[in-house]
Every structure is written in structure tokens, then in C-alpha cells.
Length: 146
Image 1 (cartoon, rainbow, N blue to C red):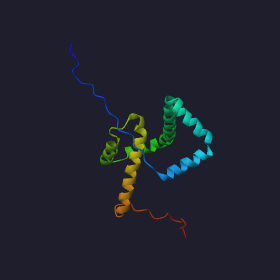
Image 2 (cartoon, rainbow, N blue to C red):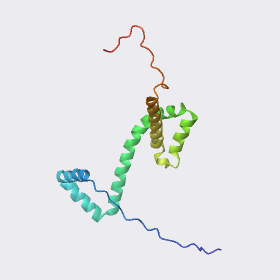
Image 3 (cartoon, helix red, strand yellow):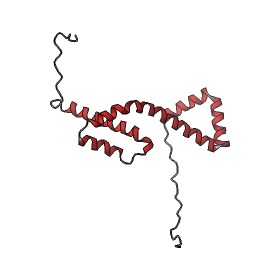
């Protein structure tokens, strides 16, 4: 049996870097003043049970993701129909956007990529109005807006 010759190197984590946003700090301070019991609870939670605090933060992230996914699930059929109606070039752009995406975020990334492509096409139409399809004349007997 071969002896493992590889050295195990410890990966050093980079120190955390925090942004300082005065507007966010004001909102947080206002919330703290309005909810002093929450401040006491979360302070104790972090000090006395850090594992539970981590789970609390992760649970909130997971709830946010679920809420976003409810909207994504409503948009997904239209995004797939849009994708299927595209040229090979447009499909390739969308597919490039999806490369390397975590499967957990695949549907969200797909809808966002389809929206970006639709936006790109709309902007191109506005930039080149001569290439945009002409609007049909109003139907006979239709009233024109004043």
C-alpha cells in the first residue's frame, strides 16, 4: 500500500470585510429602538448558542429563497416558451449564462437569463427602429386615442 505523500495544508480563511452603509445603520438602529426585546434575544442567542444563531440566519436565507422561487415558478413556463422560440445564437447566450450555476439556483438563473435576453432584444429594437416590426394600422372602425 502506498503511503500518502501529499502534505495536508490548512486553508487560511481571509478576514471578514464589512461594508459600512450609514443608511442601513440608521434603519438597524431604528429597528433596535422599536424592538428592544429582539436585541436582547439575538444578543443572548449569539453568545449562548452560536450554532442555533447560525441556523436562524440560514433559515431566514432559505425562507427568502422560497419566496423568490414562488415567483420564479410562475415565470418559468413563459421563460421556457421564450427560450424555445429563440434563434440558436440567442439560445447559446442564455446557455452561456447558465454554465457553472449551482443546481439549487438553476431555475432562477434560467428565468433571469431569459429576461436579460429579452431586454437585450428590446433594446436592440429601440436602437434600430427600422428593423423593428411595423405596428399594424388600427382596425376599421376603431377609435383613436385623443
